[in-house]
Length: 572
Ligand code: SF4
Ligand code: SF4
Ligand code: SF4
Ligand code: FES
Image (cartoon, protein in one colour):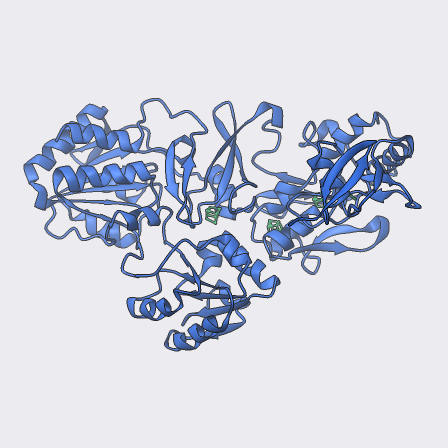
């Protein structure tokens, strides 16, 4: 049972968990102690001294974020002495660098500025020496403006503790201290993987997102919780929008990824420049012309009925929502009787368990990765493997090729040596097996020997591969003998061999969000929705059904994919 202690904060009796810091205990009791360098997802550091409090029998003021509670402790958080000291700390923070709030992107949202207002600081008491401080704009997605940095080191801890990348550190000492990357190289030339975790935790305008800068303060934007659809990890995200436009994407702290995203999930949705399809198109005399939904769906239905079931094939990407995928199967397999499948591998031939989680990785003492390279395909999972290693887990990599994960492997085996890797897993106390599309049936049978002991995490090559597997959808396109092929591709980049194969099909329907090589050859093109416009659910890495929520309105004239399929079914 948890040990509790009795403390008094500002004269109020508070029960706190033994081991909590004063800041945590106060927060749990609804008492606000200001803080800057502290962040709930990071190890307390005690760098800024803004949280100083008076603790009975302590000679000096103590930082609440690092000071543990103890039985009988009496704490004052807003006494005259505390407030005077806190104001001094804030004035020093403002005086060290160049903080011109009126020009700062974070003005209105900055935690330092908010404290200045809270403690009535409306001018600089200490003369500002206007130091010449650099701005590093060498990174693609965000800028480091050292002028606004308060050296709280949240970014350093986020990079090391959450992304496990350890790019950031400090250089020099005292007043000259600066955040730096690697061996003091420009940020754009560093080992940074652009996960943006540092950007998300920075309390000031020191780290500035190029795209969302000056696009709206917290009070002017809306936040919608949803799921990233770039890979099957299914990280929780918050889509930040203003006036119906996506401003930026942030990691959701309450979901299994605990705030961490990768470059694709965080930046891709606002950087994509692919041409959008905004209306159904029908190709006539070699030219794709705009058509109404009725014209396009009537034509498709007529051609399907004329061809007969054995001449119709339908394939969908796994990167689609549960309802759409189920409707796709119901229409093409159930109603048409067509050949139905998915474009990406579903790992359905591997009889291995699933359901392992990111938390299982963090609690593991041995992680066996086979047939996969998480750091290039399922990056947030890759970061968690690196985090587990930091805590002492051994990483065993089974691969015949050098890949991103190889740099961090404690032991490497070729695929012929899988048995050796499995023996190490058997000797561990909480092993986790991470397997991907590079695993074959025979290897899966061998890995099955760890079933009773290990957690298993399948790395589906596409987002909702879990659902495709549950629906029993086979992967692989085979258009041989088909008169009609219907491809639901959403926004995936379709492989060249798929394009080559379907070029020969007499009647091709492509249901896609963006234009590409397939839409250039399709007889009918149907437009789809972006993630931010979609509503429904999908399965994440843990096999958990998670809601996908609409953050911006559906553009006029577009229809959700599942409704299009229902409309088509009504015509068959
Ligand atoms: S860049 Fe931001 S998070 Fe990093 S030390 Fe400076 S103020 Fe803190
Ligand atoms: S973007 Fe990610 S990897 Fe790069 S410095 Fe920030 S936390 Fe580290
Ligand atoms: S790891 Fe996958 S789900 Fe998570 S942010 Fe990256 S692409 Fe999205
Ligand atoms: S929040 Fe406690 S020292 Fe910074």
